[in-house]
Length: 119
Image (cartoon, rainbow, N blue to C red; front, side, top):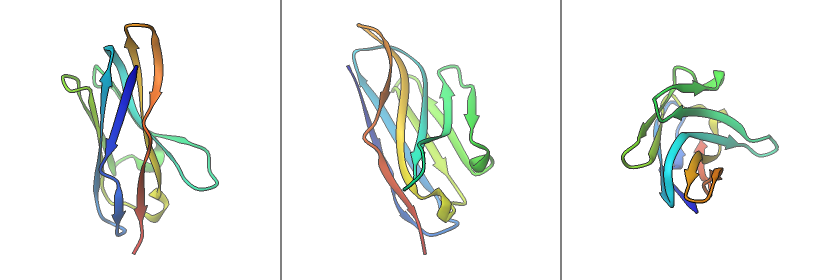
């Protein structure tokens, strides 16, 4: 029903920057919110940042002041600008959306993109 395609992950040195993108497609009537979660080895998946279609944002304390989430409602695309990256930001980053489709409202996930912060 809804497909999420992520891009922008990779290897970066500490202090560097990356920009993640996630485009949603499918039988979407409306998107309530989009966000990014991450899962590091041996740890639970956690919220990194989320944004509603109206522009309200929510960030994990660990990324406040370093990461910025934005949304392009016309393109059903969410972005995550990550600055001042730290080794502890290393994880698989998953895109998420709360969307209304022709069939129902539901939560959808991308396949994940690896972010590695290392010198």
